[in-house]
Amino acid sequence: MTDYQLVEQKLENFPDFRERAFRTKYLAILALRKCGLEERWKKMNPIDLLELSDFAIAYDSMRHAWTDVTKEREDLRGNDWEDKTTLCQKKQIELGYEPNYYQDTKSLQ
Image (cartoon, rainbow, N blue to C red):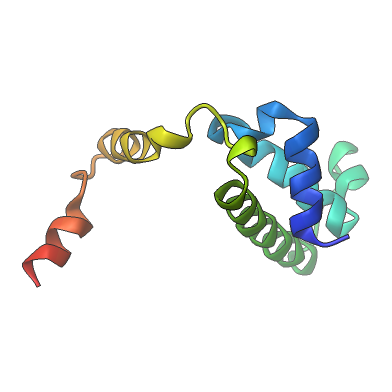
């Protein structure tokens, strides 16, 4: 099963996974499973650097799959799908950045 198919199946079965607030947690669990590290993580066993890099690659792949699935299937989008710009701007302000800085810089060029 591809990452896309796996993420699509999980989005169909777990509506919370559709929301951005819960996306990170679900993607991390899927990536741990893909790398065979879920049991070690549950038992709090250390993970070495090579395993950590494998996890990072798996997580990134799952994140891309989540984005692709939610772009293509409107029925699997969360309630906050339309609020992405607003949520991003709020987070930027919370972190001390000026919202839309990059868009303003692009328009000046």
